[in-house]
Length: 239
Image 1: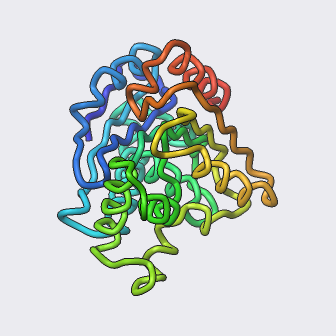
Image 2: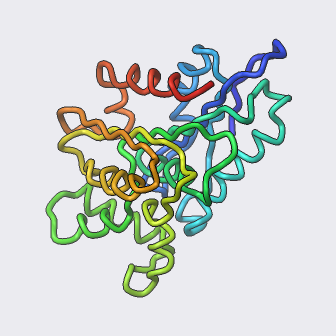
C-alpha cells in the first residue's frame, strides 16, 4: 500500500482506498488522484492493493484488505494515524471488499464507516443478472464473480458464494455504509438495497443514493457533486 501522511506528530483520521477492476485487474496507481484529494483534506490515506482473482481465489482479497488495515493500525504512530478513527472507501469490485470489511465479524475496531462507489455487494446477484442478457458488462461481471470463486459456480460451491455475499455476514456491530450507484449502470442499486434490508434489523444504517445516467465507479464519482457528497458523509462519521 501507499501511505500518504504528515510528519508533524499529529494523529489524523484515516481513509483506506480500495481500487476496482472486476477483482481480476486494476491497481492502486489508478487511485492516485483520489488519494491526493483526501490527503489534501488532512487525512492519513492508505491506497491499497490486494491479490487479484487470477492469482488467488476468495477470500484472499478480503484477507489482504483486512491485513492492510491491521498493518496500518499496528504502525499508526509511524504514519500519524488515529487507529480508532477511519473509514474504508471502495470502487466497484473494491466496493465489494470495502463492504465485506464493514460486515466482517461483529465489526472492526475503529472502523467508523464504509463507502461503496458502484459496489458489487452481491456476487450472486451479479451472477444471476449476467445470465441470458445482451449486456456485455453484466455478462463480464458474472464471469468475474465465477473467477473470484475459484472458477466454481454457486451450485457446486455454495459455501464459497455464501462467504462472498456481504449481506450474509450482517450483524449488530457492522459499520454504517454509504452506497452510490448510477440509475442505469450494470451494477444496480439492488446490490446495496439488499444489504440495507439485511442490516436494518441490526440497527446499522445504510444510505443508498442514485445518480442519473449509466456512469460506473470512478467516472460516476467524478460527476458534479458526487465526491462532495461522499466527503461530507465521511466527515460526519470521523471523530
